[in-house]
Length: 268
Image 1 (spheres, one colour):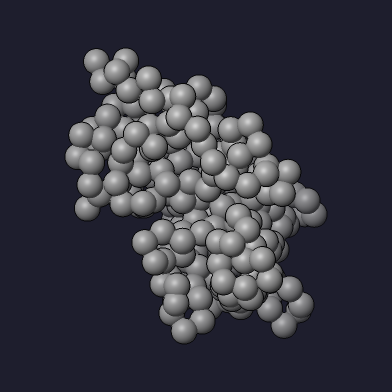
Image 2: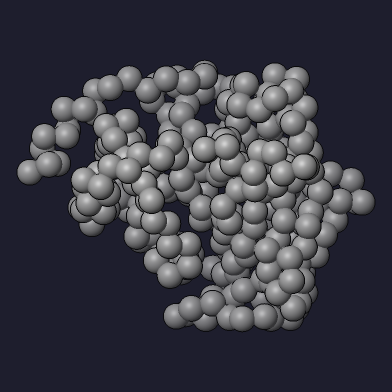
């Protein structure tokens, strides 16, 4: 079976910067094929690796009522040119989980803040995009910033979701693929995971999810990363790129997806 054969590749080394310099609970942000990309950090010893294939993330509100500014964004040193600016946009209106899907437009709104009060934005009520503000990488090419997210009245307990994207002034690097935040307002973990699964299976529809490092091919390097996630088994926020079906764990069903895409090799 291919799983047995490929396990031999799991000893390959993972390179990267020192884990202590990276905020591992933040989203990894980087570049994939000339465009901005989102993901999470995989750590092997002291070597964090950005896996830039994840597009569904969890934010648990409650640092203050209805608020959190975690997870933020972080990158490895040298990922970007010094002082490269990156901004965000909300691509539509806030949605709420119904138990079987997401609502269309609702009366609740999400407020975002990316610095001073002048950076405050409100999600739209008619599904039109709202362009946020940008902030710059430091002189070492590290992009480490946090957006504050506040769920506004008449919001109630439950799970909400909103689609975002990252952009750069002037269009270079190119805009990221859309990504989603799942906002947990006093709900249980199982419900949150149901929303993640719904988004991964019905909305995001990533055609090459097994390309974990987003380099355009599914190869032995991706297998090394998948095995690391497979050994963890249970996913932890903010995101889990190896959990292809979004059910909260990395198991044989996810391996089947990986094996199918490994046979294809080249991503569409």
